[in-house]
Image 1: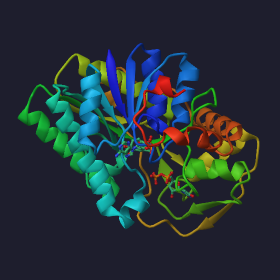
Image 2: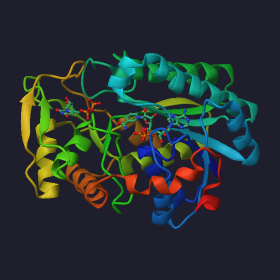
Image 3: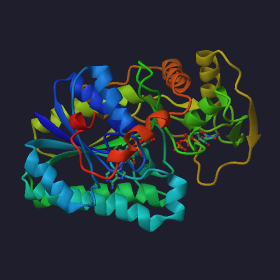
Length: 356
Ligand code: NAD
Ligand code: UDP
């Protein structure tokens, strides 16, 4: 069964490709490589010993999408492609609305045209904004506080409207909490551009010596140690959640929302401690002002995903940090050493196997 994975060369997409291939699905990746390297897909193949097809194309390009649907009998789409940086979305809102919202519209148009009506969509816990209480359940109020989060809310609403207009559509909206970690092989992981914004990529660059010290944003939050609390989830657990959601989609119609988190909150200082243990190194830290827009505490109630998808996160924060550290220390420059190797094919639509 062929599954189209948009944004499949990215962080969560590449880990999901591994789980899909291991579960026996055939996959077709479409990615414009705006925030990823084709090398990640080569490594997916290395991990699984299985092949996949790759189209270097933009989901905003209806002609390219049309060709992909004509060339492949696609049964369902897992849709990761999009921009994801909160701060950048504040500075470039139109780019975010265009890429995320218009991109999803074009994708849905192509799916409709080719009679493909199953989608797993990457939403985010960002849609909850400042939560009224924790743990956060799916039917708690939404109210994103930045343009990135609002693109996710708009897309959720758009997919809901589409499903009402045509009940044959079957959609799973997955609201991720804080994905971290890497595949245990150390071959694939998160490869941020420039100085990371997120906590764990920042800590791991301190550990490898690329950055001097972690700046802990705020020490007066209403939490056990004054630092922000989040629900960190291992990316491999998250990827497995997509396979479970896909299985559910294949057997029913409707639209459902699922929190994908562990249900446990950890503070910034907890994560520093876990990383120090995993890497066997001290992480120099200093306290600075709060980061504007940050909330005190966020963690999921993942009961619905457990009940309806039969999915539960299994990996703890030490394993998350060990796997991040393995990826970071095996690949101190991320995928960059392999970037030039593929640059000649960067502007063409190529079949992945032929490109190797
Ligand atoms: P990522 O940037 O690593 O992956 C996204 C991929 O989409 C990249 O490979 C990028 O090149 C591709 N892409 C972007 N725009 C495209 C377009 N117009 N056409 C084709 N390809 C395009 O990000 P990720 O962390 O893997 O996140 C995947 C999805 O999950 C995103 O939609 C993101 O908003 C969502 N999400 C991520 C997090 C997180 O913390 N990483 C949390 C919640 C939700
Ligand atoms: N954080 C921090 N220093 C950093 C990056 C993040 O103290 O350099 C804190 C941040 O204030 C929040 C937590 O780490 O409490 C998680 O932040 P991240 O950006 O990883 O995720 P998000 O804010 O999206 O939940």
